[in-house]
Amino acid sequence: MSVTTIAPQRFAQRRPGWLARLFDYKPFLIIACLTPAIGLLLVFLTYPLGLGIWLAFTDTTIGRRGVFVGLENFQYLLTDPLWWNAVFYSVFYTAVATFGKFALGFWLALLLNNHFPLKSLLRAIVLLPWIVPTVLSALAFWWIYDPQFSIISYLLVDVLHVRSTNIDFLGSAWPARFSLIAANIWRGIPFVAISLLAGLQTISPSLYEAAMLDGASAWQRFRYITFPMMMPILAIVMTFSIIFTFTDFQLVYAITRGGPVNSTHLLATLAFQRGIAGGELGEGAAIAVSMVPFLVFATLFSYFGLARRKWQQGESND
Amino acid sequence: MTETVAPSTNLTSATPDTMEWDSRARRMVMIYLPLACFVVILLFPFYWMAITSFKPNAELLDYKTHNPFWITSPTLMHIKHLLFETAYPHWLMTTMWVAIGATFLSLTASTLAAYAIERLRFRGSPYVGLGIYMAYLVPPSILFIPLATVVVQFGLFDSPMALILVYPTFLVPFCTWLLIGYFKSIPYELEECALVDGATRLQILWRITLPLAVPGLISAGIFSFTLSWNEFIYALAFIQSSANKTVPVAILTELVSGDVYQWGALMAGSLLGSLPVAIFYSLFVDYYVSSLTGAVKE
Image (cartoon, rainbow over all chains, first blue to last red; front, side, top):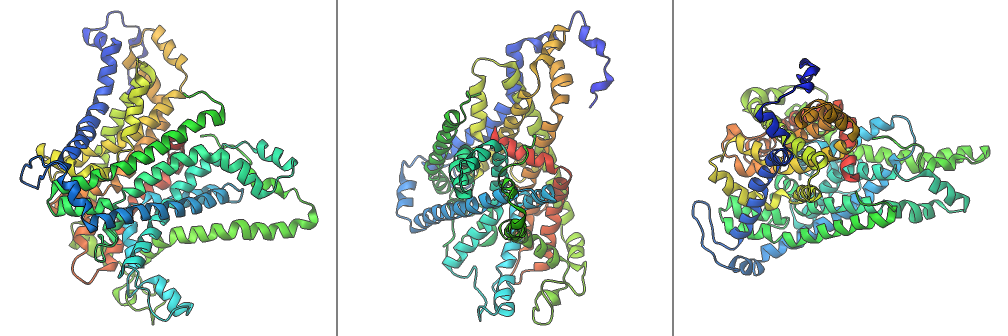
């Protein structure tokens, strides 16, 4: 930064040039400052969002401009067992993974909220799964789930002698579904734990002291102080988590690509398979658009979570 | 981020001395044991990734004579294969260039936007802020198909430039949000003083607000870098030629070939691809944690 090189006298300049005056004119400056961000978002976010909804009502394929076909794509999807399958697995995946992430993440946050040596180091280590590129850790999971050389099978069969055969993690529908959910939970725990830990640290210790003077047990303190105080932050973190779990793509694409026999397709991977790999842009867009109602639902959930915060903490909204 | 001290459970340690052993054992079972399990499970995939990338193939596929949890004769074979027989260094460079470009672009755009929203304060500025925040809730999974056609229209298909322009769509909302929070924490009186002294708005931004917001800029910068480095779906959809691929996409589409997976090379690729962000992360842990938690609390 060259900040220090310019002499401070520049502040006292008498007659600034017309350019300087233009940039000091507030309405112009506001527009100039907002243009890059708003421009980028309009061109690469709002426009594609609208275009995606339009594409969903056309029969566009790669290389051919489509014509408006009305609800045909959606009608087709409603009769498509693969789409129903993807809807089912997306909801199931989101529900189970979110529950797992929050149960384990909340537990980890409560553990990290204690005092012990090397606390900050531990907190740093815990975030690692969230920092590392998802596809690369997904590859590690793929290797861990290998049918022949899975380290989990090795532990269970050769070390603990609990089973006699290797587990076929990704070979059939239900084990594959649960394997993917486990990988998603593994990746999601750190984010939940660290966010909730930040929330836990804002709860005033005097509340616990008061409750203990009144003879509240540890469970009662959790149930009547920690949990209600955490509600607003839980609502926000959960909304984010639900949105990004529901629209997850990387984990499934990297580990199973929707297989075996299309049993682990999420809506996003199905949209990719039909839209980009298969070239049916219109149909892929329709699948992507069919995710929107779920996302709107999650956002409303967030909105009411935020609204709750105002009366709960007794502050004005700023 | 100031840390509030002494929360919850350690208050219970005010028990009589006779109970001390009991409470220590209890603490062991209630806190340290579960914590240890969490750490082992959260770190195991990385350990497994690292150890696989240094194992010779013979050890890799033979659990009967070799303990799979350890290496008896470590080798650099997989890494050598990766660096000298594949385009891996090239993919690394592309990823780096894309991540730096996208980070720079989004930092510039979101600093200006955050300044306008938080400091220039015009009618409706909260709504503009809210609009930008809402953009964060639009996930890439519903955008990539129409975006692919937009990218083709602009003639940017198969070019890293497309990624640099597209990544800000998820970086700008986050960074703007984070920086608005930071700007809010800078006393407005400083700017008023400068205004009285005759500084222009841009001088104020450049010389007063920005230097004070450096921690926020670092947080936003490293966050953007990490997110761009890790991005997958756009890079998969917009890039076709092997030379222009980013590391996550290239490993999955170029190294996974045939029926016999080269686990050693795959894991070495994953390890090397994770290393830059992991190093970056270890240098700036506190910024990461504060930006993550700050964004959620905001």
